[in-house]
Length: 193
Image (cartoon, rainbow, N blue to C red):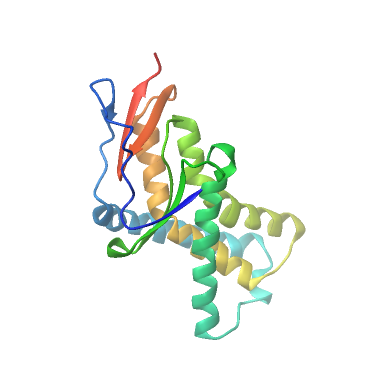
């Protein structure tokens, strides 16, 4: 795994030829703007589910503003590590890159290689499943009540709004049998030979 400060790095060994098609996707700023309503809806839905199907009313989170900010920073770090853990070799490959793009206020986990379309979607959705959905399911089944867990679950699904948008674009534009690869921010795909 490598660490990168700045824009999602380009792959020097990948020059998309005519066999590769470009995914129709917005720029990073526009993606965040478009995904914001998705994040608000997803957070409202997950928060509502916490209130309806768990005994959350008994355990609202308490703490200082600094505790909430620290929790959010922790969520972002764990979120990106979960993306990387879903990469081939569990993120322990030189093709796995964790980075921060300051001008876009964007943390990212990037895989610099080819992936199947379904693996690409799984990488995008894994933090939402692990941090937001799984705790909700466990709390529902065990009838546990944790305000902090509900806050983390809801905050994560809000922060995953660009992942949710990306997964939707990939699912609607790329055939299930295709291979996917990124060149910097841009996503390309081609049918398997």
